[in-house]
Length: 370
Image (cartoon, rainbow, N blue to C red; front, side):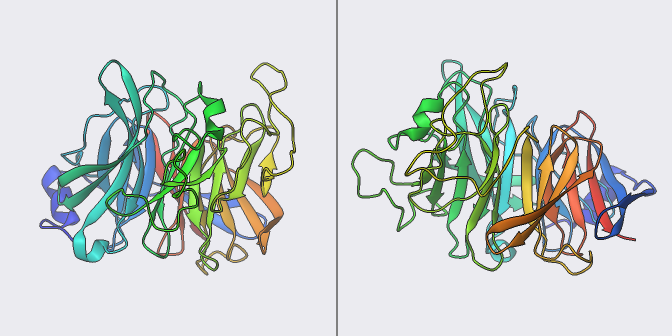
């Protein structure tokens, strides 16, 4: 996989795996073992499985590390650019190039500091070369940079055609701009690997719109996944105080923020309507908010009854939310108490489900059949 194997790196660093202790976790469909595979992570944000079964993990403070299949974590990988690590900002989303096995390229999002004390969401590509990132190149920059520590979005996912979706938040203070096609606040964009606008984007011919915009009217999207059967982009986003949403983000559609929402102002107060003609209703929403983060379709067979379910992490309640689907509709919801803020959720190649906890002493948890 690398010039130095992960095992060689781990041994060289003197890191020793800790014995794994399993906690029994009873769910509606299966009883699972929940193990702490690794700990000591600084507010981990995203993870991706590498071809050898190990994980690449980002930490919000600006670090990227390997975690082996048995839980050993490496030293921080060199070459990560400077990040604005304040509030919700830092090193965020992560995805492997569809041709990673050949080109060793990764993509990651981060809050990029700019001159004058302002910052914005950016996405960079890099070659993963052992303990270093090489040829780091920023391929996308949110058009507007402001002085804010909130609502970066930052989830990354490739569609089956090899085009990159990037989720972008409204940055908190610029929610009205989520309705303006001339900027990037509150948008999903679709770009090529080099950051240029992908072909077929819905507003490419409009002079008053960004050519890379795919969908708009979003608040702060921190979950994105491609449906394994349809290839459609599913997203979720934070509502203000209530009104967290799951949507199928479709080309050219307006998802309404802040004109329509099932949430309200913090401390109370109406923001908009719940419905309006021409604006998309959420596929599913939560009142009160669960503060969703991370999302994955479970396509394994090892956990009985979870096949093709949608899994969503909850920051607010420390839960894993399991959603059963009938076509494009949510037909049942189960909330599974984990006991820590869940920042990311990934179905692993071994059929287990992996969770990252958003803590000073962040953990990688593994849920597997007993």
